[in-house]
Length: 176
Ligand code: FES
Image 1 (cartoon, rainbow, N blue to C red):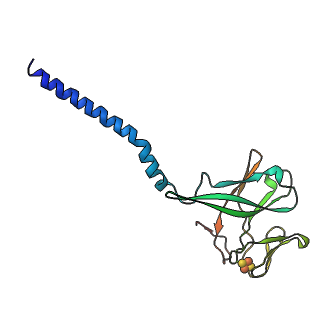
Image 2 (image 1 turned 45 degrees about the horizontal axis):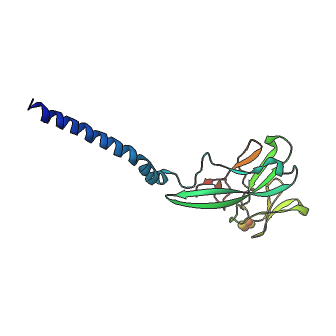
Image 3 (image 1 turned 30 degrees about the vertical axis):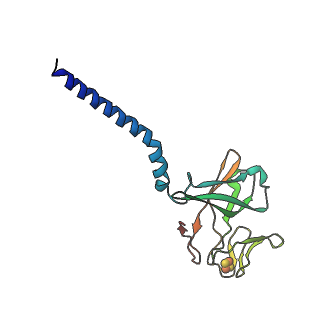
């Protein structure tokens, strides 16, 4: 009896210590996840890479329309909102009849304008000219305007933003 009591006490002490350690670990998990989570996230990515542009019903069939999407860049704990302009045109009722072009000029990156009365795109920086489908027709840009992937989800337009290398004839995706 006198030998069993110290053993029982040390066993109970060990179990208590293990339980306390387990509870402390469980309580620490959310704090660790909060601290480590932002470091594990990749900069500039959100979900599947598509960003909502707006309801399809707001885009009339026919004319080009300048719209925007908002990206959230996450770098560690720092969050930055970045807006990108895209040219959108619905050529018909079907979801596949949509054309989405980046508004960034492939020459040196200026914003491209749509000139309604001339039915063409024009870059004011160095006189780049593109036809109504974004095909390069004049001026220094080395290629046509850059098309962007899109999806229609529940009646809303989603666009996958992509930057491309400027000043070159090939369309080379770049990550920024
Ligand atoms: Fe557009 Fe030069 S940046 S033509």
